[in-house]
Image 1: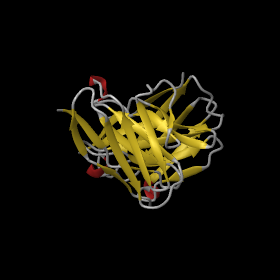
Image 2: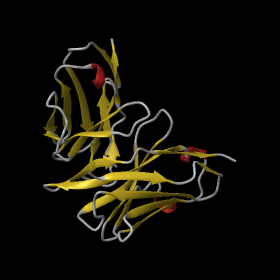
Image 3: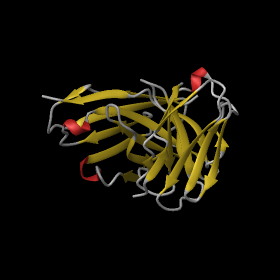
Length: 107
Length: 121
C-alpha cells in the first residue's frame, strides 16, 4: 500500500496568514493526488484534484502543487471559515489511501 | 447537482452484517463514475473501503476484502455496502461518495453526509 504522510499533523495560525501543508507519498504517484477539507461533523469537501487543479466552486485562495512523491496545499490568506482538518489522498494505485490529516486551528 | 444519501441501521451487533445503502440523485449511475464507500472511526482519519464501477467491476481494500461486498443497482440509482462479521473496530461514520472522472482523474468529488454506525451488543 502507498503510505501518505502529512505534515504537520496540526498547526495554529492567525486570520490572514499564509498556510502550507505538505503530503508525501511512499512511492511515486505522478499527479494523482487530491486534497479535501473537513469540518467537525461534516463530510469531507473536495478542494483540489490532479495535484493542482481547483475543483469547481472552490475559491482561488487554495492552491496545490507537486508531482511524484511530494505535494503541498497552500491557503494564501487564512479566513475563519478555513479552520478545519485537511486530508490528502492518492488515487493512482489501489488501495486508495489518505493522509492522516492536518488540523488547522486558530491562534 | 449530484447528491448522495446514506441509509441503514445505526446500531449493529457484533458478528452480524452491516448493510448500508446510498441513494444517488441528480446523476445517472450508468455513466462513467465509480461509486465508493469510505469510513471514519471516531476521532480518526479516513479509510477507503471499496468502489464499484457502473459496469459492476469492484475494487476493495485488502484489509477488508474478505468481509466486504459492494453492489450497484443502476436502474434504481443506488448502491450498497455489506460488511460481515463486524466488531467494535468497525464503529465509524460511513460515507458514500462518487469518484467522478475529469480528464482521466477519478477522485471523490461528491460525498454523502455520512451515517454513524455503532457496533455493540
